[in-house]
Image (cartoon, helix red, strand yellow):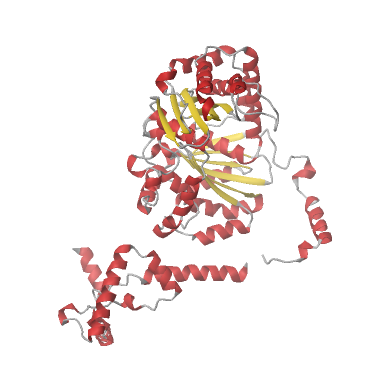
Amino acid sequence: MAVSFVQRRLMSHSSLQKWAYNLAGFNKLGLWRDDLLYEDSDVKEALRRLPQKYIDERNYRILRATQLSIQKSVLPKEQWTKLEEDVLYLTPYVNDVIKEREEREEWNKTH
Amino acid sequence: MMATNITKAPILRAISIRGYAAAAGCPASKGIPVNGQPDYEIKTTVLPNKVVVASAENEALISRVSILFRAGARNETPDNLGTTHTLRICAGLSTHNASQFAITRNIQEVGSSLTCSTDREVVAYTLEGTRPVLEKTLPFLTEVATRQCFKPWEVSDNVPRLRLELATRPPQLRAVDLLHKAAYRSRGLGNSIYTAKHQLGKISSETLQHYVKQNFVANRAAVVGLGVDHQDLVRYAQSLQLEGGKADCEPADYRGGEIRSDKGGDVAHIAIAGKGGSFRNAKEALSFAVLQRALGAGSSIKYADENRGLLAKSLSKCSGPTSITALNISYTDSGLFGALISTPCGDAKTVVKDVVDILKGGSIPDEDIARGKAQLTAAVLHALESGSTAIEDIGNQAVLIGSVANACQIANAISGLNSSDINNALKKITSSKLSIASVGNLRCVPFLDELV
């Protein structure tokens, strides 16, 4: 009980954050922030490392959003992604990939 | 270090080489062999957490440090078979404080080398490098040996290397591997040192982490060094902060049996063994080693037609190139002793029957025993003289027995053996049930019940 109380406090978003998130509009298609990352080489490598479960969920969301886009419609309001549900599943992997690339480049500069 | 062309000019290179040789403190100028003094004194300390630390200062130019664990293939359970093979392939992958790139490049840059070797009983990580740089690279040894991460994508990226190793095993190696399976059944010492093909890709990161957590424990660890100061090594071993864990695995249980692996081709490779000597009884282990050389275990002179051992008698009956060598493998509490035969498939029956007759024979003539003792002493002294074989031997003794004997003590122990010891060892084989493993074209290889 105590643990979940702490978690909720750390993860609670201000109204401004929630308003900005809803204004962006991609949550109406059921997408998450990490689904929208531009797939450059770092993100591609991070996607290669992602466990299969997250890849399957990501593909489902992207496919559903594509279908909605073709039909020029959006999800019903109950199914719009909420900021609390939107987990940054890919960003930690991307950050690690970038850190490794920078380590390599730094080494090549001095050796 | 930037690559420059300046050192490629012959005259400048000659000057730089001469300059180094005359540098103060270079062992060559003091009369010490470049590989270090062969008669070094070994100091052993056992830390409070049961880690055995052994080192010798042999004044070599290259220092070597090795971390060993009694975590070899015999500790694998049926659901994680092949973990030690994967561990060996995954040595050097990302750890908690260093990425794979950092480990490889930093060690390469100073000219050191880091190797991992696994066995049925021991997993060893060895770092070798010139003295001034060894201290700089020791943290990487700690990382690689004790703080592995086993990131899932790195492990799966290395499955092709596992596959390559499996594909490039020579058939004699497969025969000896299967011999263990035949002798000890499918557990403990019977476990293969290689992953089975059906397990490729199935050893996950969690399995590896769990295996390391269970088996890389302080009461089964040793840290050895050659060309390092003993107190420095003790401090290093304490800094590893290994935790205690469960004690050793089940005792070995020799059963005997046969395994045949039909692969076709022209040659049959057969490994035959009976129950051999274990390290617990040092005298018996040395007797079996002398017996191996008395029966014939490889030539001492390259390219020589030297067929002196007793096992060589069948060679004249063979129609093609044949190799018969005595096999002696000792573990902490068990061992295998016998022969490894590679022969054209048609001659397999005669050769195997002759070899079994000698193994079950009775006694060895004194001159063969004397030759065996001399050859074994030379081999031991060569191995312990210097270099990678020395650190490996010292490491194995430290981690398996807990104390390290130096070359002179072992040589004296060998000369203290007499013919009755060797003949008693042979009698043990006579009374033990045989194990046979054969690989290749098996149409003429006899079955176990045809031999007894």
